[in-house]
Image (cartoon, rainbow, N blue to C red; front, side):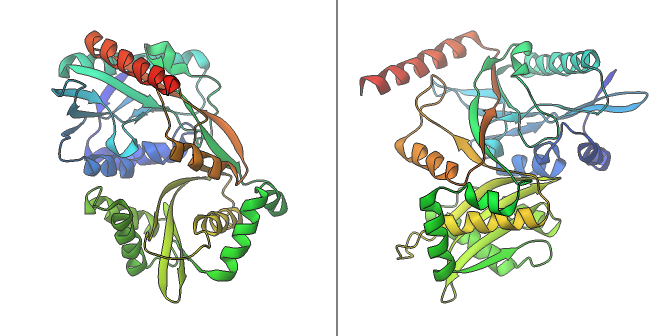
Length: 361
């Protein structure tokens, strides 16, 4: 086996591998890599050390890998393996199809041994990895623990779009059905995909994104990339308007037979008691179903405080809202690997203190 750093002249073969591999989803592609590199905030400096594992038969695995300069708990700069565009989480390697379990183990070991060597070379303090439930291969357990990671898993909600339309509707919470009906009567619904992309509408989504956040949260370049994903079939935008004025949008990432609820933007000054998100999400589900998508990941599920995750009351409400569209709560496996013992001690103590304070409150 050989390990080769990804260069631009290999982008096409890398992305072709992702299309063919049951392990890979959009997070593995060079489109997402470019987005994460562009996403970096002013405090981050990103180094792309993505690589692939190969032998005489061809590519065996693709391994996205970003090194980011961040601020440590004590305020001093530190370098981590992380992806700013993915909430700081690096996607795990994707392997080719048709491998025996033993062969997969050896390739993954080679990949993580190489990641460890990169960590030593750059003085990495911590690495954070994640899996995705949207691949064609089911992850039955958190195998990141085999490679020195601590378990940082959470849960997520995935809607099975292969069931009949009436079953999809029947899975909605009663209150959601009521609000969908209200939204259908009140709003005009707009779907923008590869066949109907509208730059003016997309810019409305972007501007509402800034308005809702009170600031421009990430570079303009990342929004331009997202618009081009729509043009290439890797994204869709659903918006609602009233009397020609947009009230809100949701952006969905598309790849293979899966979809991911990427982001939303609502106009905080739009005055109405008719919910926006209910009708948008239902129209998205219908659109995905009609186009034979099989899975829709609608978002993270949080139920209470954990040592690595203490949700706010707002986050718990968002989780409850997302569960109202049906689907199944499944693990979203994550792993945290510390290369710096002092950082590990400081973060674990800090997390524990936050958890204890939460229960004291």
